[in-house]
Every structure is written in C-alpha cells, then in structure tokens.
Length: 357
Image 1 (cartoon, rainbow, N blue to C red):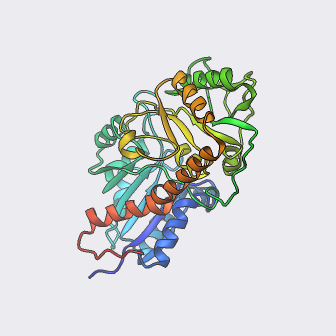
Image 2: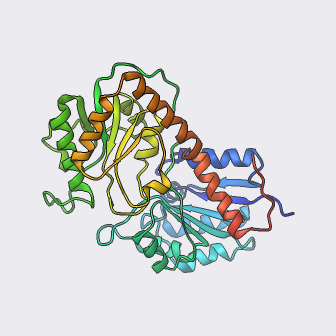
Image 3: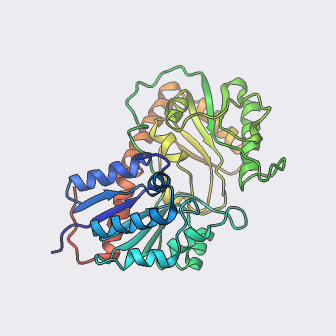
C-alpha cells in the first residue's frame, strides 16, 4: 500500500488565505490522514512580493521540487500569472512526477471572455480538468488538449457563510439580488451573456415588490435604478441575504449546461430560499433541493416569488433551514473538494488505498 497523497495546492488569491473553503478542506484532509502531506503556495501573492515573474516561476519550481508532491492542484491560473506548456512540463517532470489537476471556477463564453493562453496551456498539461459547467465549456477544454474533463460545482465555506442564526419572522426585504452588471466596452445595453435578462429580472421584481426588493452590486448597468444599493464586500453577502425572504439570480453564461455561480450554494447555505434561471442539466446537479426554484423568464420568477410570499412565515423558514442542511451535505467545500480528491485517486492513483474520515 502506498502512503496517502502529497498535495501541493496553488490557490488563485489576491491575499494569502483568501481561498477559505479549499484551504480549510485540504487542511482538514491532511489532519485526518486523507492526505499524506499538504502545502499551499499562493502564486499570485508570491509573484507580487518577488516583483519579477521569472523569479516567481523559479521559486514555484523550487517549492515543488522540495515538497515533492504527488499532485499539484491548480486553481484558475490566467494571464495574471502567465505560464506555457514548456514550464508546466518542468513541473510535471520533477523527480516526484506529480500529476497536474486543474479546477477552473470561471465560466467562459463562446465569443466573449474566452479562455486565455495560460489557461489553455494548463488544460493541455492537466491530467484532470474540473469545470463548473459542461457543454461548450467542456468542448473548449478538450480543444485546448485536456485529456479528462469532469464537473465540480461551486461550493461555500462555513467560516463566512452558514453561520448560526435565529431566523427572524420579520425582514426588511422580500427579495434580494446580489449581482454586478458591467457594460462591455462601455456600450449601453451590451452586457456579458445573461446580463440583459438580469436587468429585465430586476425590473420585473421591482415592479411587483417595490421597495421590498433590492439589488446589491456594481456596474454601470445599475446606474440610476432606484432599487440598486451599490456593491458590498464578499463576506457581507450572508447578512444581506438573510435580510430577505429569498434571494434571486440570473447567472451570466445562462445557456451553459449545469453551470451556476457560487451564488446558489452561498444563498441556500445562509438558510434562505433561492430562485435562479434554469440551465440545462440543473435537475441532475441541483434537483430535489428544498427551497431552490428554477425559472425560465423574469415573469416566471415573479410568479415564483409571489408563490413563496403566499406561504406562512413558518413554512418559509422551514424551507430555508432545509436548504441549508442540504448544502452542508452536498455543496460545502469539504464535500466538493473531497469528491474531487476522490476522483483524482480513483482515476490517477487506483492502486492507493482509500483513506476516509
């Protein structure tokens, strides 16, 4: 029997420790013996501190050589930290012969916001590429050279969300939307895919709910709208969501199969029902979750919101609590990253004995 895997995690973060969910998950796996060794190397933070990209690349290579990982787990490496396939092969051909695993948490479009050269290089050299959506996104990964494409949805952490609370019976808002609406090239009405529907949804909810509806987010698309209350810090989302009876979203890249942003797990983990636009395959990934409702049009979203508001208060509270419990079981970072690591073991290290908590 071989010892448990040695994992080098490369988080994409602007400040050390910002990737709370995966860091806590990997630390827990190491403490429980599910990882034989674990180290995180924040490549963007180190590149900024060193001030020279060539030096940063050398430091990462030396860090990997000294740690001798079995797996290098890369998160969302882009042109902010450019690498090519030749460099990635240097990492893979270190004496420990590590396998390269990518988790890409961004969605991309067919024509707008396409994967850049660095991301395509990482996909090409990956042993497994985990994506948050499939369909044309999986096609793009395979076209870049990714040999194995798998789905791994967004998760949430219970350090910032899913915190203990006593659900209030009175709340200042009926519905809240946390969403940016940036224009492309500063052209009025030209948004990321799904952006126009996002604004239509906000208008429809405001017409129905009035001042009991609010949008929190940045972007020129919200300018002049009475319901728009500006952006909020990421960690403030939980309190904002809990100020309403439901959260509502229309995701960008709204025809991407099985894709949702982290809005879905965060909102439901906070113990509040969530309404979101339907995307192909949702019934497979998110089917049967209490308190989660799909809609196809802004009008259908309004009808669903009114349906929820027609429920007795206790029933709405129960729905939110049941949703939060389902998130803990299926979409907590410990579960999502644990599932990814098990897939890595199953597919890349099948001879290793499974070490469970």
